[in-house]
Structure formats: C-alpha cells, structure tokens
Length: 256
Image (cartoon, rainbow, N blue to C red; front, side):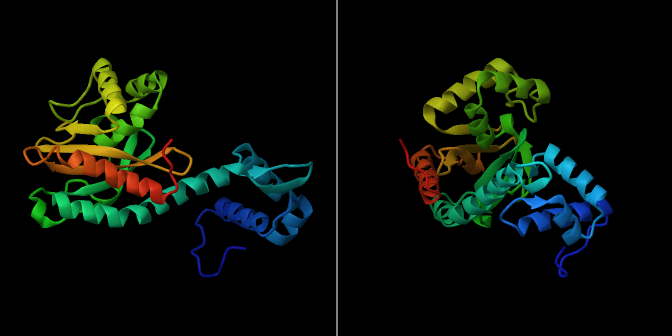
C-alpha cells in the first residue's frame, strides 16, 4: 500500500496503479494475479485491467500467463533520474573551481526532448552578467552551446527531424535558423569537441560548452561557461574541457 506519510493521489486510478506497482516491488519473483489482487485490495478484474495497461507501456512484464513483475521501462526511467542526480553531485565541486577561474556563470544542463534544462549553476554577482535562465529553465537545442553538443550526437536524419519539428525558430539576429548552417555548425562541434553560442539565445551573451559522459560513453550532460560577449576568453576552452572530463571520470567514463 502507499506509505502513510505520503500524499494520496487525487485521481483514484493513479492511486490504484501505485498500489499495484508497490505490490510488485515487494516481490523478487513474478506475482500471480490472485496474490496481487489480495495484497492490493483490488478486485481481480480491476487489477487485471491495470496490469494490462501497465504491460502495454512496458512498466510491467508478463513472464508467464497470469504472473507479473516490474518492467524494463521503470529501469530505463530510473537510470535517467540516477544519471541526472549523479552528474549534479559529481559536477558541483569542479563547477565552483571553474567559476573561481573565470568569475563567470558555469552551467550544467541536460537534454529533455527538443530542449536543454539547466539543472545546476555556479555564479556570483562579480560576473557582471544577469543570470537570465535559472535552474529548471529551458532553451531550444539549436540556440545553445550544450544543445548543439547533443544535436551533434544525432545522425543527419534525426537532425533534420528536429529542424522540421521546431522550425529552427530564432531568438536573435545571430540564431541559426537555416538547416544547412546548423549542419555545418554541428560538424565543427564534432571536430572540436566544443560547442559555442554566439549571442544566438541572448544578445550580449556568448557561451562555450563541453560534454559530460557516463560509464557507458553516453553524452548525458553539458558543462558551459556563459559570459558577456566581450568577456568570454578563448583561453578557457582547455580548462572547460578538462573540467568536463574530470566530471566524466567521476561518473565512470573511460576515454578510448
């Protein structure tokens, strides 16, 4: 059952779903429908309908007729959450050290669909730059340095699909709104292993970003330096890459 110290869902069917998942989570082996019904307090037909829908979404597996266990989709989602939490913990110390060097905002971002989401930031008032996007803020992939890192990982078909979905809408006169321009920019990102935002999201603000990789070699986040356009120093590139590599190593990444 749902723990007493948690807030009950306001939608009854969701409460029943949570109860069924809790029952399955309490068993290592597949659980028969009759037992799920008894432990959840649900009528067998109700439990069966819920389990069928969960199985359709891969949240539940049916290893044999009439038995159920938690599905792989939950593992996939759990790994996404774990990666984001782990990368923040691993990044915060190195981010602060990089901020001490640059005195400019240091951002940690992850991809979510067609946008990046800012999940951590290290900055101070001495940067001389107003922080426009707070933690939890979002921005389109093609307008940000970190977003370009993720797009550079996609194959050409996926990049064209992204362009079709978003229309490559621009925010400033510098925004890359042409697919050919974007593809050429992504090619440079792959070559340099560094991405840039040249006042494409906000006029007066430039950024550079390097990728953070997990123990499977997957790009899971981007580390970026934001600065007023006339204060972004090229000498920071190597230190940015080194810091991103340090975080990746802490997450178990080993370069080939």
